Image 1 (cartoon, rainbow, N blue to C red):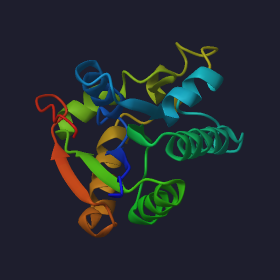
Image 2: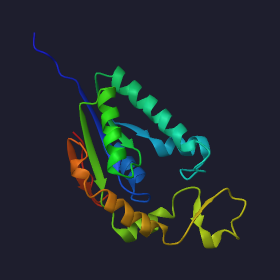
Image 3: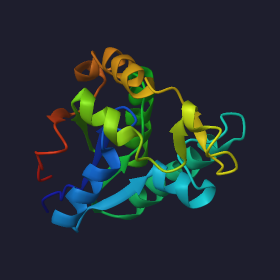
Image 4: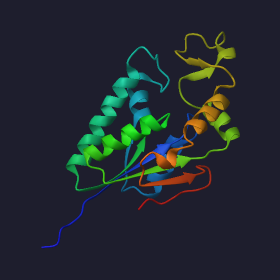
Length: 189
């Protein structure tokens, strides 16, 4: 009897804050509803109201734990699944660790969808994220439970992230696909 192979693929969205990972995930799922989405950001927003939370409050750890539980469950219980994973990974060490976990959970293909969003777009999209504002707005927006950033934060993030992603092709992905999320919509196989 021929052996049937299972196909369990995870497409990891890779990009800095404001690169359009969540936006791109929505576009892909609208065109390919058979895909599953697991989003760390969605977990944070549902539980804490924002992706930018107190770094000492444990929200980020909570969201990662919930995300890993969901990934483990889906990859271990479905014989075939394609997951779009929206989870920020700041450097190679984090990506390599995540890839190893995904393979432990049962993924037999892990693809990076590396968003190469232009800097000026990131500068604009960053400020559309829920729960954040510019430092100069602190006085006029106090009491709104916001996290404040310097006006140049998106540009600094952009530079730091792309410097840390220079070796992405060596992180252990089965494939790295570079995408401009504004124009390209790569159908996932």
